Length: 616
Image (cartoon, rainbow, N blue to C red; front, side):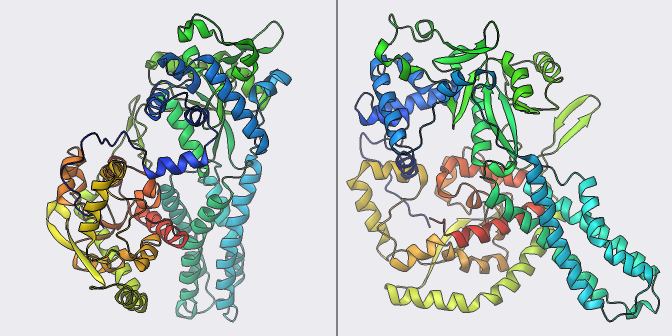
């Protein structure tokens, strides 16, 4: 629920000047990062740190080198902060000296590859075997008393291995899977075809009339299979993907903006199955104070020329030199050196996949890189500078030697709109009846907790900009507007937070019951009525307020083409950690890449998010 903030912010306040609540949480989690240590010791200001982080996100490099180039602090201050960082890490049992490890074992740069693709494959095969086996067992229980021919018994007995062989032939046991919607679609299609073929064989090989066959048993087993296989796979990935052995190792080529975005995405989403081990880039500005290079016999650790890179007239004090020796890192993945190390890393660490993320290179240079790595890497993945465009698995198209990325807008066609509306009506009608007692219970608790109606209505923008009243459970006090105005007038930091995120992390307007409802997203349940009436959909973009249109950067033309949703892609991915601009971008990508499988995936993720209680 959004409330109109006062129009004019206090003089001197700035959304960029105050850290948002999620930056504060990150600061608490990563208080031993170099920038935070320098900030805590008073060597730099918060504004300088944010500027340095912004430069690092665009250009790469070690944060200490960036701060020195800015003139924010000197080498001695950085060295002292590095010493404190190492001491704190040692006390917490988290010391990780990559440079020392590289010196001790230079032939493999001190790196360890702990991923075990074969183990991941075994887990997926076992999961499918158990899911399909359960479905087959249910079918056997139903048909155990039927008169079956030998052919029918053979077909039933081979149903599970036949499904698994077909899944393997369809490359659905890849350690790095397709996007979740595409995987759900592929799994459903393959299992359905196998079941259909097996059922047709059993009908043709019947001993008695077709009416005596247990067709319902086939239907139940098929439903169990198409539901259980993707659910069990998704659950296992969510549970095991953070284990060091999950996935297979990759080397990322490029430490610039796109390369950093790739590494951060792989680190944030381990279920993708790609574990970045090292980053390579020839640009010294993107490297740390040291790098790996070829010596006379093997790779060695060498210093990057600090004078030429920082413009300083003197090297760092000798007593701090050991602390100053660090690789640049991206979310813990080191930038170890130049591209000439790629072949050695592949051979010595047995890494078979490289990810090229260097959009500044022209096509001929990229092709040359692919040929260069072709002898050592069996798989080379090239990332174009369209990182966000393919967010939900936009397919590629081969056009006579030209590779294109297809952006589909299926919700612009009548057929997909009808299918989406039919799914809304069926699922909402069934779900609404089942949760009716819960709705009555919540309304009663709200009434007992605070004065006023248990419901709250707010005008929102629906499809084609048509206004409608969104119905929600009331989670705030009746004088919420007055409380917000007083709160924002008293704190420029809270105003900056509200202007950027359109909500507060610690909102005094929220009631006791309301806080619980928001945590588990239960305040949205009355909007099921809006789904029935056609004002909303189960899944879709966020229902925006009219006053938010100026902030949508003219993207409202895309977002408002479809019905807003009770849940959406950002609600089940970034949740409250995303800014308003990022939420709009994700809603745009949802509209562009919609499919019924994407809706099913979002609905399944919504259930886990609600149970986990990661709401606002």
